[in-house]
Length: 337
Image (cartoon, rainbow, N blue to C red; front, side, top):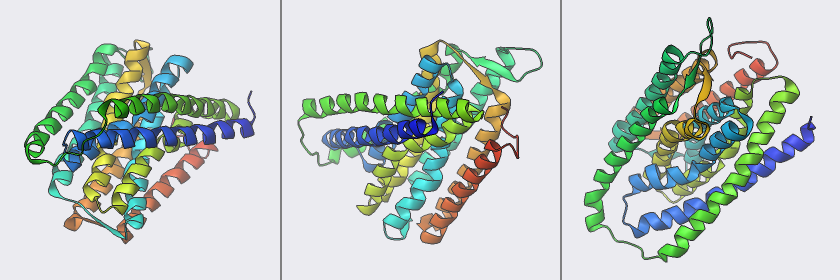
């Protein structure tokens, strides 16, 4: 069994490598987005979001294929989604001068489609338990490749909507010419770097779970989630400092939509099916739903995210971490072990 110091070094190295790979990927993706004349919200919600969320995608596939631990993938996605909607907007608002404006496109399209994505994931898990149970008397079922197509189909609808929103913008947009082949090559190289970082993060999560006798889901929600969210943080903070709030917040929503509707099904498809414990997933998804509704209410108020509201979001994430600590030491048992 690996030592805590070695596992911690895996986590730090994996986070650093994922951050660097995500940085390279997002830079290449942004240049390509400018070259193709995409509007800011589409750049944030699709181009930057897919790029910065590739670590979550990689972690889910690696955890499922290499370790048979789909729970780590679920934990990484849910924990990263919480980090994205609570920490990243809070830090971005403070770093961007103390306030960040939103608009109706973000509130009534991006935010609401994200909430719909949560419902689709819960529906998929429910259908797995109802129609593909893995044992009598247990709320455990198998997410089959057929069920995985449900969230993937929803993401196809999301891209379809974004595409049509970008058609008119592209007709009048000023495009920045770049060396397209070089940028696509940089993007491909960054994906390989991210895979290395994601593998180290998953190793750390598996090792910590074995070392402390705690559910892999909890470590996925902390170690893997925080490490894979670094690229998202970089993108949103940089956009906020550049006074581009639409890109900053759209990246948050787009990253979560991609993680929920693509990263999770990717792990299922890669393994040909994956077991899911309904009793373990629902409390975590419940926390994410409550946090998402709080975030939605905050950004809708005057279409502005203020410094005080940023501190509220950070406080909510602190409360979430405190709950996980209590769970880990055994004082609560909401998440099954």
